[in-house]
Length: 143
Image 1 (cartoon, rainbow, N blue to C red):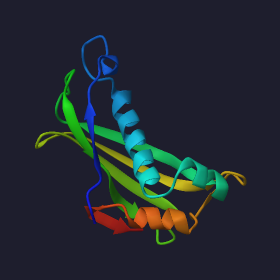
Image 2 (image 1 turned 30 degrees about the vertical axis):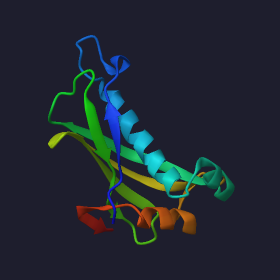
Image 3 (image 1 turned 90 degrees about the horizontal axis):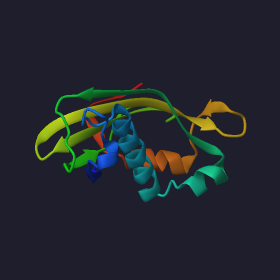
Image 4 (image 1 turned 30 degrees about the horizontal axis):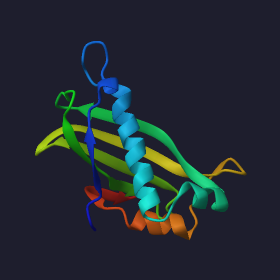
């Protein structure tokens, strides 16, 4: 599967008073990249509204290994780490790199929710097709 990544850079507004990147910025980068991936693969917000489903997260965890600095240019990717056989639950990972240096890893666990019934559900075919297009991590597992 083809890699999916985007370029990022650290803005002044991403910094805290100690000139560190605020931890929440990492999660915002991840959320943006996930939505860009979905949108690029046909699963737009409009499609989710029409099919009455959307993603929810149960866990979002970042591991920081290199400090990021104002003006840094970075890349972030997306990988599927786990899936239930019916595609109702998923795990995803984002790697943030500065050149070859791995700076942070974000892991998320989530599911799809029926936005009318407010219950977890398996996605319709358009959701399955999108997930099948996602690159998989080396440690990917079916659950």
